Amino acid sequence: MFSKDSNIFDEFKQGTKVFLDGEYGVIVQIDGPSAIIRWDTPKENDYEDWLSCWGSFVEMGGKIIDEDYAFTHIEDDGTLKIKK
Image (cartoon, rainbow, N blue to C red):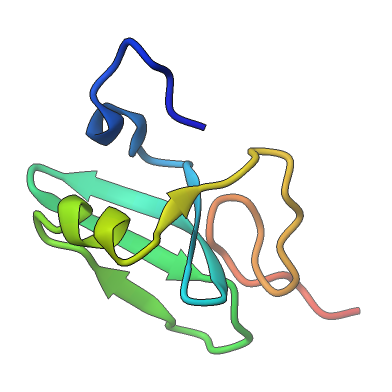
């Protein structure tokens, strides 16, 4: 998913869908060195702060996934899906 001509960390931006340790999520906020990932779980507040840790994220096997990936529990913006 990373382009050959860019720094891989430039690819991480708000709205980017990610995968780590069997979990899917979306970056919902980036503010300076802080980036918040909303994980695709039914929990109302399943957010995680990756403060200046993209290097660790990638080293742990984290990756950017296809933007067309459909989450189970959350919308593309990180809000919980409304149960019908």
